[in-house]
Length: 312
Image (cartoon, rainbow, N blue to C red; front, side):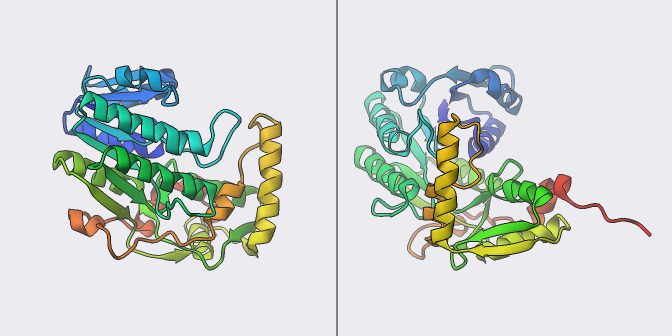
């Protein structure tokens, strides 16, 4: 049996889907099971179990993990709220999961992190993810650490967000003009996780990026091509972006997250660093997986934003 924390999230649902196709019994720990009922169709009757749980409650982790031989931790946040902080989710909760896995005798722990995660990072997001990695490996030395680049797919936050902005704004902001990204298709990341499960892989660091490397501005240009819209792309210096993000964070926290997180300080700080794979770790090619490119996948889910051409 496999226990997946955060299985109803963007990446988690694809992992559950692929593992379900293998016929494995899966326990998915989520905060609101009623919002994750769609996961049931990824397996046969009784194959996928939804369990209400909160990873910040360490006393219940042993019960949540149950008799699982494999545990996958997909839980992450990309901005802080009043009750969810980077340190608590990325470090404290991740280490508690690793500790409990060790205690109950879990054979394999797969921990999802991010490219650029580093305990010395100036980005609170990447810093806590780096600290989380270190804690997990310290406690569970044979853990698999997965570091994806910017993940894209039907439910992604990046391309969908900027596509929505393009519907109401003549300008798209480009932040960190020199920062490089290596976008990776969500289903390809799920394939890599499934590979590790099937092969019962021990300690492994995987950095997962797509076939191409882009600057931020080039990602926006590619988006506009696929949705057939012309917009001005405005390069925003990091200092200006931080001011905008600070205002956005303030309004969001003051309104109890009613005001949307268009841009956060954590995101801006992370845009200062390249998001591409290193040369000294394993990648897709080491698993025999060929990642799909943006031009193949973007048209499959951005059609609702596409400007219709008028026939003459």
